[in-house]
Length: 237
Image (cartoon, rainbow, N blue to C red; front, side, top):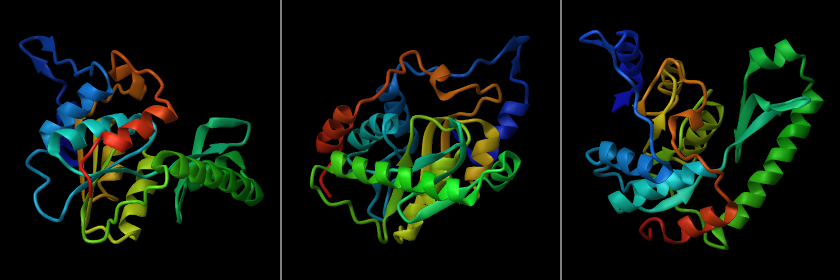
């Protein structure tokens, strides 16, 4: 297990052991990654009435495994990436309910207009509202005030949506906000450590590529699967 502060140091050591190269862990699937993450978190969930929040969609699978193993309540936080004009896969920022995070350098480099940003924010806010209504099926969100909140995803690349999720939890007066992921690049973990009270990652490879590369099975998660996991993935509370 690596914190944001020692991940870069370990990766930079070159991992030369007896002339061989230390390889990083690949997870079988999201459930297996969540079980491994739960083991790493087992001594970090005492006090402050802890709760686990998954980032949909795939992050909820990981979060449900964590919540089951640690017998903690499970809920969701729904941040959304703000896509660039003509290239929605390229992020220029992220939002969560009441929170907006912009990559100012990217916005300036691409010449993104304020009008486009407002239109994209409105589109993603509508999708957040749809997902929240769909996933909770009428259940109210868990109260976060005064609690230890573990935000869980299946991995982090650039970190924009994770930052939005952390700020959202803090805005709801969580006592502490920890971000826990199976894998993320060291530079992203360093940035996230400035936002969350604690950052935990099982793997922090410098040759990151994409989150999916670190799983043997990385199938798309459906809304129906998220609904089922939230209905039975954690304890009540």
